[in-house]
Length: 260
Image (tube, rainbow, N blue to C red; front, side, top):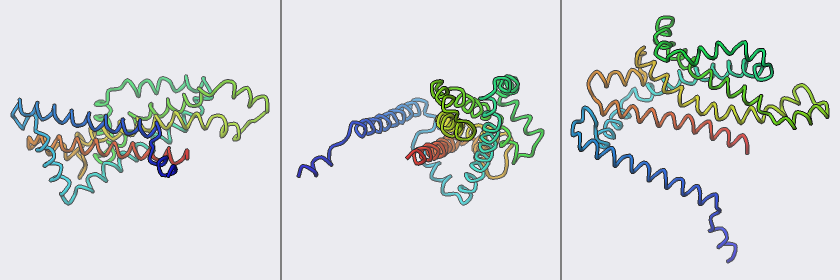
């Protein structure tokens, strides 16, 4: 009897998680209510469509035969750009974290990457590459500094006492990197990857709007805009948000499984 009672009790962590879920639900409902009120006051669907009209457009879009192909093409570009940026970030970030000389050598390049307007990057990519590859380059250029700095900080912010202990026991080479730097690097890189993934998808879609590759989310945005279908634009925006949440959630889930 006591065992059955104890199993029904919720731990403080579970209660906190339940509260967080309730807050998110309440916040979502509040946003929908405000959205509905604003749409009713404006009373022009071309400017602010109602949530119901946006939902109907989402159903229409998701029922189209090319929907999953459109999603797949954009996700493919996002993943390719992300993986290239991750590889470049690790390749350059690890030595930059160890060596201040190498970090200072790369600093102008990273600063240029950050300072150049995204629109300029998109236009240059369209000049250099075709419409299918241009968004990948844009995504890479924008998120590379995020991943690079995460890796550099992960290497640099290792506890100095742990470094002294490694020196004391003369632990060097791969064992030193695996036991000392890798845990710190993994923590910083995980947060950087999550931030970069969502941003990368948004940048890829923005680049697709201008480059208009066949069957992509960005091209679909442009088609809805041409037909002045604001509800369709809203619908694709929500689909993109859901897609970004799935990609970021996948990274978080992978990190949790790896730790366990």
